[in-house]
Length: 211
Image (cartoon, rainbow, N blue to C red; front, side, top):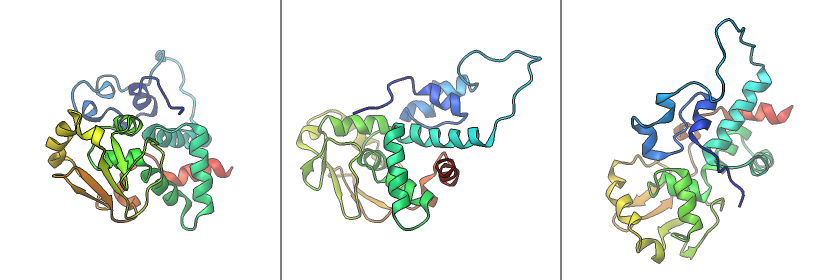
């Protein structure tokens, strides 16, 4: 499956904000954004007039932030937008819910992985089961009532013990329930957009695609 394989720390610097793409590393002194918050590439010298950023460019930046946050490419992200347009409700909020209900994001939100990239890898390598069935598709859409557990292969890995020990310090969203003893989780409600803490404005993304 297609995915971004470049340096993710450059994405935080490019969009001018921490996107927390590397988990715990983003919290410590090794965070590239903390050491070099300036955009990547050759920096402008003094005396050069800075050009005004257009509204279209600002809308594009919000859309690219969302893509980088959830690790999806343009074609797949556009499909999410079209699906959000088809469903009832506020398009921007529906778009966020569709992205939040991706299996790799749910694994990350449950505290089973330090980042969405790691969660994606866990799913792809067969460490996660969805409703008792092994699922290796990170973009698999989940729904209320679904149960996410570590597979037999995943339980034999050293990572499950590391994640279990650190689970108490993780902040689990209210729309998810987690059993730390059995390392299992369940979706108990629809994601609350207000609690997602998105690093982008979904309404601006809708404006970008509406033009």
